[in-house]
Length: 297
Image (cartoon, rainbow, N blue to C red; front, side):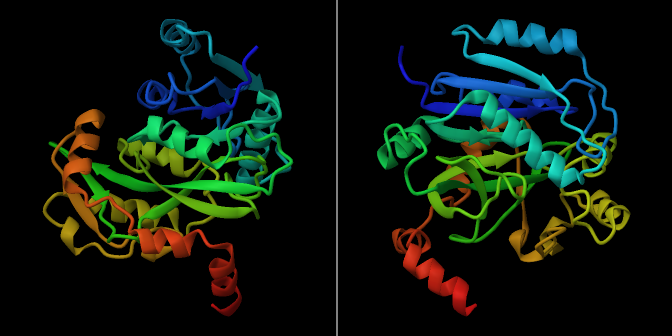
């Protein structure tokens, strides 16, 4: 039996329907896929969320033509833990469920790969089939966050070259200390995802920011939410350094004239200037350089 090398896990919850966009983008290249779901339908903050189980399992039956998908239901909300600790715990249990060895990927439901075929080749070039005995490493991707849906498109984070938001995606040793983050070396790949993070309806966004693992990262959720409500296609160019946790991570906003995700990705590929320089990647992925930078910052 062929080894399952590319193992992809998703946490399914209140926004599970976004999986209909994210899962097909990785389905054919993945060896196994796990969708983990709290059996009590509680968020990491202990808040109940609506969930159409019949539609969820019907969708899986229709899409899973190669029998790659497993649904893992368990108790992922523990009252004595913080939201972030419950986040960490679910991700660890999901990776345990998928078994040791191979590349473990965790992709959120609202994250859409531009080129998963290329990313898989990139991972296999690093190691064709890690068994866990190798030096631990995390493989990061670059994110283009979608901030708000407008009448005809999206407002998105428009960072300059080499300053894109970096997000952990794959690892040869799945450990989780801060959502998908841990203490292993972080290797940045040249691949991109579109992240539909804040581009939700008002009610859905309120549910998200009161339920997710970052619930305690805000100075004031209400104030930040009101700021977000004011964003539109006429004032976005005045918004600077507005990430709720690390302001400079979202340096400015741009406008993307498409609402369909496939069209949005095509537009970003042509107009987004999404490319890392070779010199930047060389420095960024040097353990020596990054160690010295961390020591003397």
